[in-house]
Length: 425
Image (cartoon, rainbow, N blue to C red; front, side, top):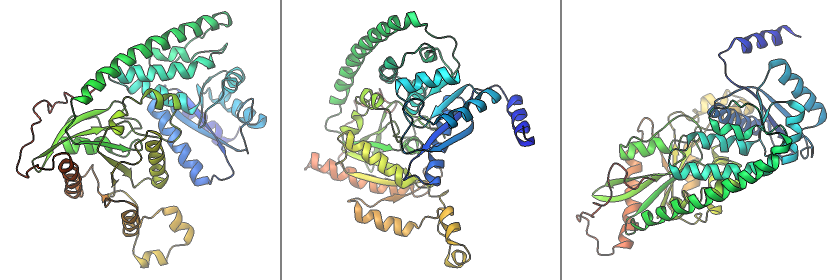
């Protein structure tokens, strides 16, 4: 054992008690080192959001996953040795595992095995607040877990809270567990149908009002912008999936009222079961008149995040709606330095710095979009007035289509909506 390894083990052993995790990702032919590290950084944040700590990362370049254990046999032995030596509690894969892969890995490694979908589902389960969101996540989770019951099964225990688990279902109990899960799925679907009918009734009451929905990748600042626009007590954390429940608030700009909703953030490889179960919550997006697409321009992969959001909107049938693209966090984004500084840097240094030419970025997206993009910083309030102006102008256009005879000084009646969020669900 090297001096470095002994020192690392001592640090980990004396750290505050927290579940330890290792991360695993395959490197595909088209992947660059930068992309892989960005993906693993995101996986580490997801792990932290769940309440565990990612202490090590494993990668392997393979054309396709091993059909039995996802990674090759040599890499699996390397991972197993690390897990045993450092007493790791869980292993988390950046891709989805098949039921047989999960079973084989649990049998081989003797620790909890998460894939990306299960990790996200458990995070959603922790953070859901309303009855609708809790039911949706629970349904998605059971649908995901049903084919993955194994002899070493422990995932069903996770609903008791936290990330710690004990015990598991025995071989003779597997079929009983499956019957129980199928029964729970049926009951959850019935419960969700009832909640969705109530939601439809609520949304019908909003007809005649311009509706704006904020969308974007997770942790880009949507909730911060929502709080800034509405002065409402909306949760805004520097964590992935700080918002799981949709929240709707009344906003009045220049004597013109409209409804503004904050929706769950998107993420690459969002679990299919979760998208399906959350369709009623995401109805806020489908039924909106205008979308505000918030982008964290300080993130090195913001262009990829824009693509993920656009792809998800298309899957939801909302890809053709008018969009205000908001490049947020300009105050911490790496701005392009002056030419004198650039001349002293190598091409590699410039590339690694990830400088952003805001003029070119604005010019590019102004050509692509019908509405000029906005560059701002919600946290510090930079350019908030420009955003309000653009938003007001677009809301006014939609309102005038609804009410061709609307007068500028007319006060629209919104008495049935409360500032405290009567329409929140």
